[in-house]
Image (cartoon, rainbow, N blue to C red; front, side):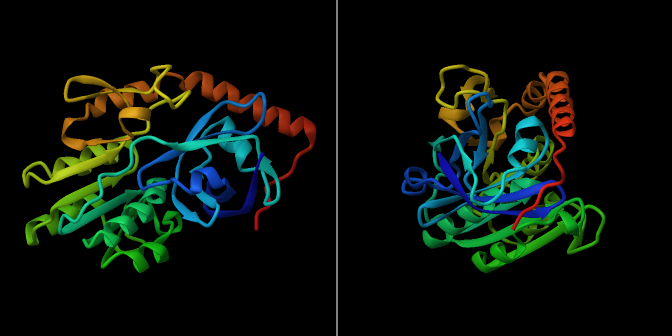
Amino acid sequence: MYKIESAARLADRVYEYWIHAPQVARHARAGQFLIVRLHEKGERIPLTISAVRGDAVRVVFMTVGKTTEELATLQAGESIMDVAGPLGRPSEIDNYGTCCVVGGGVGIASTPLIAAELKSAGNHVIGIIGARNAELLILEDEMREICDELYITTDDGSKGVHGFASDVLKRLLGERTIDRVWIIGPAIMMKVTSAVTVPAGVKTYVSLNPIMVDGTGMCGSCRVTVGGETKFACVDGPEFDAHQVDFDNLMQRQRVYMVQEKIALERFAEHRCHCGEGGEQHE
């Protein structure tokens, strides 16, 4: 069992959990993820490793389905049955020069660890984080402390630049030389933002989030098309060359089980209602 050291709500439907998992914390690197199973009858879900502190790892997630809704009901002091990791290939960190790390929505959760490792490797690190509005921005103070420069964007203009992360990245590419770019967020955001770096010929990485089951390359459910070839996000990624990713195929596969996911969520809500459970409480 893996104890939850702390649990907090960062934004609407977005939660931050610190989980005591020494075997993960000792080996975790930027870009990697873990898989959790809440209990014997629970499904396995992948969550990006957002930070490491001693023997604990941080995960940040949005409640979008049955399992994340159930996870969000757990309190500090309670435990998760299984935590497997670290999984996936780490980010390709080196001293490149000037690097830009872009996070959109809950994808911002992946940016601090990548930015910190790039900074430690001697790079000048630019951060760009964006959300639909100011209330949905997360980890801003943490990213501001890590990065040499930080730019904020909101779709509605409620904070920072009124627009998208791609707008700021495009402007920066026109002003200076950027040697590497990392982009993490919703698939459509990664598709649009990575297209901005194509004319400049800048090596760009994206972290893909297809449907995943075992996380070890055995089931094949996380297959993605990269450079015309089939890859497994769990063992070949989750980071890939953005300019080689078939984003349309990725988004199509992400929608395969939407009906089943909706039914599972509705059944979980009914169960909670019948059990008389109230709202969540977090530290």
